[in-house]
Length: 211
Image (cartoon, rainbow, N blue to C red; front, side, top):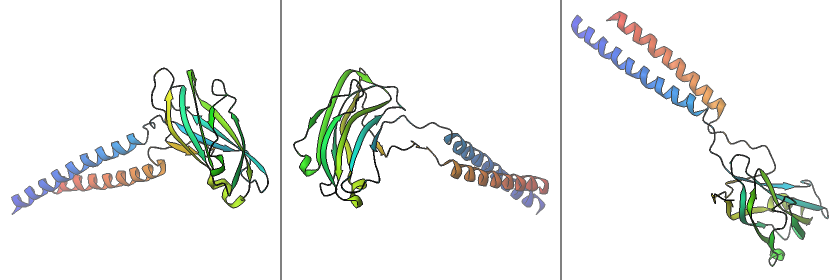
């Protein structure tokens, strides 16, 4: 009977030992992942000169390609800006003023329907935050004006390397935050695992003493 109990205790202790190793590996993976930097990505910023404009105020929308995370220069792009004609009236557009992207090729044929198509290219390119176009509107309906604007890219490539730089996310001229893992959630989970690990280790030592 004692031998059987001893053997059972050894099996329990061995299982606890394996559990400790497994939890250590999980904890290491969680802590490590919270420090892994985000993959470099391209973003498009849609910056409004007056986000509280009321009819018949004039509002400017600047489109900026943000390459701060990538080690490339914008070489070419094709994009379109859409809006509700009931909310905004198109007045004019101009280049973003940033050489070499200061004079986009613009198709204004569908502005009455709320669509402006534009494109540009440069063999030398431009790095960082590249302001590619400014579009001026008159506000017709304040309730829809801020939510109706929609920017989309059908292409964007780097100069020289031709790497695809198509923006993956739109931001409203705000701070860019794209965490791989929620740091608070990761910390809480790590603490819970540490507590569980300590409890398992205590049971393991108790089992060895009892055997």
